[in-house]
Image (tube, rainbow, N blue to C red; front, side):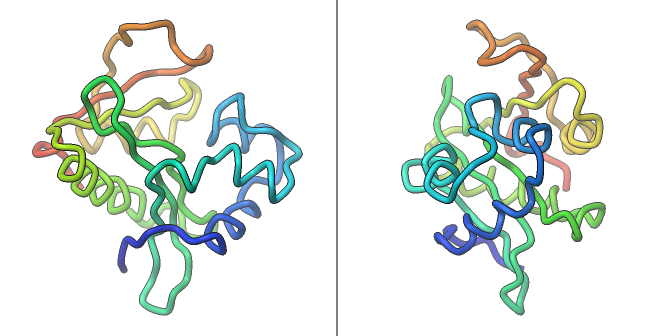
Length: 158
């Protein structure tokens, strides 16, 4: 497996991973339009503006997608997703660990953060198992029902 810069074809493939409004909003937040078109999805995901990466198998199968950017002095992870047919195989932990490693190095920071919907129990279990802990967000949260989690990059558990 490898993490590589996401291409347009990767972005188009993940469009199929979100068949309804709930899955779309849980992943991309309330500003992600649904139903989406190719143009609105690419625009709302901001894949050309935000460092975007694909987790790819040796046979080039797309396994996952994620982004990072600097937010409040941390490498902030965004739009993390594993292919529906590949979930439950620890790929999420690998994706997150590699995004944190690369993002912290590129951004010159030592901690990571992310937002997660408070009712997304599988994601919260993964993040807390890896070492992310809830923290108060210093501003109003971007949308209701969100938790803010933070982890020191060198303390992440895969």
